[in-house]
Image (cartoon, rainbow, N blue to C red):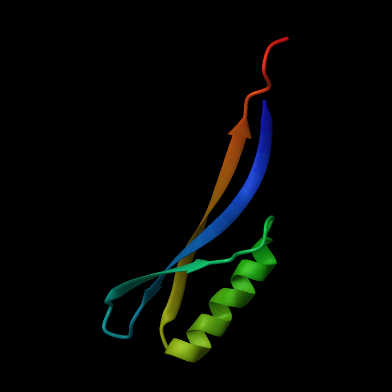
Length: 70
């Protein structure tokens, strides 16, 4: 079986100053994003929105090809 990476999606949760939870997703995330990159992205989101960055989840999508039996 061959595994091919297709894409990654990033889901983040942020909290407003009135304790409202906000969720946002982003596409086009690089393969193998590091913790440091995600933390830096969270800081950018905090600066742009004024909300507090809570956490992020990455979901990777793969395509599996089954090799035919000879």
